[in-house]
Length: 400
Image 1 (cartoon, rainbow, N blue to C red):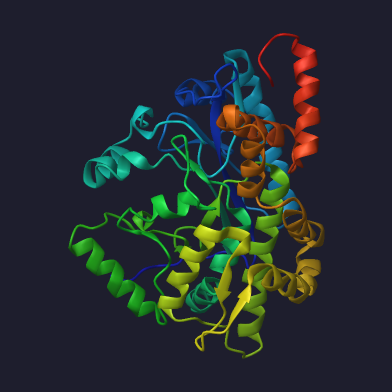
Image 2: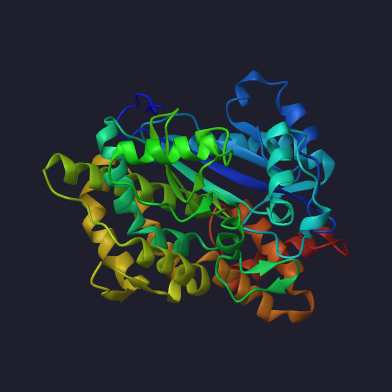
């Protein structure tokens, strides 16, 4: 069966951001998505931007199909600000990261949907562990022949993208010693994890036919790879990111994604071959980045050459600067360096947890909430100042 790839404008872009519904008094998750979305549905202008997800503690905010990252960020800010009109009266705050530090997966309720019910029924224990949150970036591809070469090139940078976004060191009240435990949990689903590399469209069609015929999937959308073709939208979808705790980092990662896709598209236009890496090295890079985050040493090529991730990022930013100027996201791309300065989210979370072990996980949630409100990463000192200000404001009440 042929796989049709929808028409799309080159380097158009869309962004999706999964948010947690956090109780302001307990810092635990609230199962209130039905109520919040029902209120949002009363306003037609919000419908394109606010969506259900698998769990009732989650609301997804999305941009429209845009030409620039800045336009996507405007949509996301509108969606978040609008949601607060419905969550504040319920004493729910909006926050997010790749995981919640202490919420128990077994206590979370699944959205009433046949699709999600079938997923949990099939995958059982691991399906019930999907207490996970991400950022997805779609970039338009104007020619189907470019899709697989660009995806395979992006696989060479997958470890970098995962490390920069890593925000899930804690799981059900434990420090996992991973930078992105979300990456490890999510790949337990049978069609998730690192992208398998195809070199001809017919190979992807044959794979898809086999998965349909054997009942592994019912539709292409059930292939939940870290980087995949979104055939109905005509995009490449980067799903590898842990959810960012603030919109500055969303902008940074969306800009980096936008530039990488267009950079490899330019290579193809110039008759150059985009880079590739053997599947076994791609799989190893995924594990290294999940485990070590911004301290990972990643494999660069089929010869096994390696480099520290920070050096890789610095070189990427130089190489991508002309593309960022072309796409109008130079400022967004420059914000990647702020992640290097402040540390990735998992590093900031651990610093806060180690500063106050008695209330470690509570403080991590409050950091997540504070960064969401500040629209940027926070140093430990800045977080402490915000917390003290909120404590003074509320007197003897709960922090933030």
